[in-house]
Amino acid sequence: MKLTVDRIEEDFAVLEKEDMSHESIPVSLLPAGTKEGSVLTFDGTTYTLDPDAEAEARARIISKQRSIFKKK
Image (cartoon, rainbow, N blue to C red):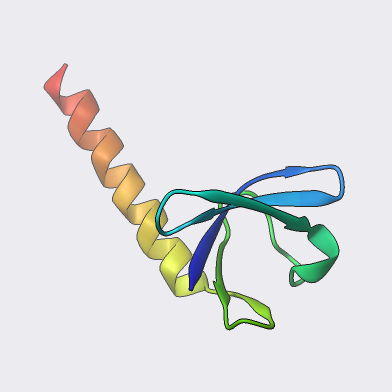
């Protein structure tokens, strides 16, 4: 399952699931280096950073932003 870190509030991270629902989990369960916008893979037990999926998501967002600003 892929999850995106929506935000980090004190000791909890709010994760966005693929179906756009959210869940909060303790930051202590996440791998070192996790930040807002990080993409994680969850295998049912362990959260792992997925830098390739994060790079793809960032590229997709940048592309959308560029297309919006070109239209103005």
